[in-house]
Amino acid sequence: MSSTTIPSGSAALSQGHKKIIFASSLGTVFEWYDFYLYGSLAAIIAKQFFSGVNETTGFIFALLAFAAGFAVRPFGAAFFGSLGDRIGRKYTFLVTIVLMGLSTFIVGILPNYASIGITAPIILIVLRLAQGLALGGEYGGAATYVAEHAPQGKRGLYTSFIQTTATLGLFLSLLVILGTRMWLGNEAFEAWGWRIPFLVSIALLAVSVWIRMQLSESPLFQQMKDEGKGSKQPFRDSLKDGNFRLMLVVLLGATAGQAVVWYGGQFYSLFFLTQTLKVDGTTANLLTAGALALATPFFVIFGWLSDKIGRKKIILAGCLLAAVTYFPIFKGLTHYANPAVEEARSKSPALVLADPATCSFQFDPIGKKVFSNSCDIAAGALAKAGIPYEIQAAAPGSLAQVSIGGSEVAAYEAAGLSKDDAKAHADTFAKELKGALTTAGYPEKADPARINKPMTLLLLWLLVIYVTMVYGPIAAYLVELFPTRIRYTSMSLPYHIGNGWFGGFLPTISFALVAATGNMYYGLWYPIAIALMSVVIGGLFLRETKDLDITK
Image (cartoon, rainbow, N blue to C red; front, top):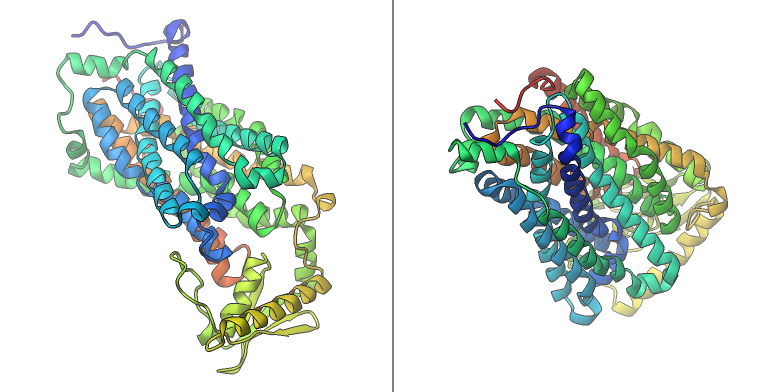
């Protein structure tokens, strides 16, 4: 038996392991800060690096680059998880934080599309992939490391501090962005000042590496290594029949639902405010940061509560509440953040009268497809303006028209027109459409004087409360489900597939659904469906773990 000891009570933790939890959490906050900068600045990055395509396609392409970092997270989980199960938790997440920090810093000095053309978005996506790989190895290591130090009966509480790091990282990124924007002004910030938050990450990297260097190895891992009970091939062992089935159930019954509630509450809500409701970036970020600050203590509260009543029921309750209330909450955001949209839509709904056979799904990630028929021109103009609309069938082959209240604006067929004629038609259509929208009361931007900030903040806070319910207990739950010898790998894979794929693609999928249908709330169906799936599968097939002894 090894001489390595495992903490068995709060006294052991209070004398040394609180430092470990603090150091692990602080380093992870900085890593999430790096990762979330891109998501918080997606609209500006779209203009800087994807300016060679139209605005709507450019924003979707920017979201895809954001999602690219999530797409590779499972591969990072497999590689770094296996490394962590073989050589140790500490050294693995030292490597991941260096990879993350350097990739973020380089984004800050990367020339834009106007300077080096297509090379700019290619390099940007490569850097996003590197960040995703690093994050795939980071979370599992930090959560496993803290859980393996925590005393029996308190893993939910102590791992909940790790769970705050994602929200704190987002909060920190928003604060740095807001501070820089207010210091420089909007014009300078959008031109070049957006780079400063990325450049600051080099200092955060230095602090994080220094902190992580002070840590010792996990006692459970060290004991297992001393006793020669470790896995030589953790990835292969994780995929063995029984463990693979468990990982699949955990993915579908827990982490997928947790992921869409998390990204719906923290990211899609911000996109909804800025892109759909046209709330200015500073106000939207301040409201989101306020909601995060007010809700963050609940990560710890729900982590602590999961030690008392169980992890599973809290996680699934959060998924269910989100699924049931997302529609009224987001409609409430419209009502309180930009009531003019709601009023105009009620009095003068926007309709596209067109032959449905001519209307296409306007998604062109490489910016080469030309949408030249009248239905696509009309629908594209409304989507770009953030105006909700419906498509109503007209006679086959007829020219599409936009009907707004008592006004009708005829679109045009661009096929066969010369460049000058196409521009003239586009300018005329845009001018007439803008006039009709203004007459009908549709605002170009949310009126700051009409934003009900307390109610908007309350709704955003409620969305983040759901995040704390699903995310606060999840680290302890995943750690307890898998054995020490393959824990890092086995918990990281379902976590990062759930969060990297189901959650990471949420903004892109939801935005595309809205653009395709004209319904500003249609994108909510994606997180609602996934959350309900997890409620059913998790409720039927997952067990409770709060009383398990992971030292055996």
